[in-house]
Length: 217
Length: 217
Image (cartoon, rainbow over all chains, first blue to last red; front, side):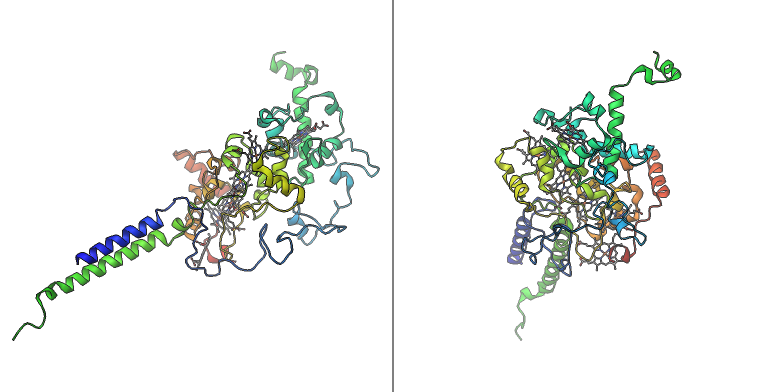
């Protein structure tokens, strides 16, 4: 009995010291005790695939092909009544009219919802560099990202299409964001930037008499 | 007549019984403790090819999760960002740091960065990020405090029991949609908040699947 107990305690201690406790960090991939059908041969986003020479599952778009929809409108693309009215619409998609000029005005109807969408997307994609007020004082300024301020006359007078183009394709040191924002979201951000510009450059005369009274002018 | 059995045999049955009980308890305890994702998965923290730190980028710089994991609120898959996202800052910040050499190479050549994947559900499980995060379920419920991790680790078991635990009582996990990306947010432990949460579940018509075909489709 004594030998048994000694062996027993030894095995228990050995198991615990080899396997450790729950939650301890480990660099080894998790053990799959019963592999079942956990890993099946199927296409998964951003996964590896030895079938293709570059080992990538997500295929790059072939040259000279015209896309029918993209990841921004994939839900609509597969709908029954989808008609791609935006595909040839340069004004909406690239912010330029057909003769290559930047469009003056946002081509979609401004509304409260669009402004809110713009606010949300601005906070996600622009604040880190441009700051919440658009004055170029984002958190990364101290690390050397010298983002522009929106509050100068050149940008106040710029066409809406120009701002849209900066967001889409970038400008100078800034990288474009068109792979991460849908055209609608980019226009919404343009609208919100206009609101920011107004907020930093408002005149008392822009307000009605009643509003001025409210603010105590 | 001499004794057939020596004296020590008298205690043998009791010894065998004790032995069996001890061995069985050890095996049962060992299996329940070790043969679960709570042990096998939690704490998995592989070394990544680039020492990217969420504690710095999302904790300290407060970059929104969607700046990088852009499609988490629009699709089932939460994408890991491409190197152009990193380069949007790191073309200006630490542009010669050897730690970032791999990112720069990947940006030039277009080859993906070989990030090691941490969270993986089995392929027979259907999981969708956007339905969760757009309904007030925060990243923190399933991924832990990512914004405090230097190296991402598997914080929750993500087993079937874990999923169901929340699907049965969503009101205990739900939060206002604006706070989903704010991992810092703490659920108030008040009666009022409980009512608010039950209100969310009711108003948003939340009905998480508990039937097998909801997740195994």
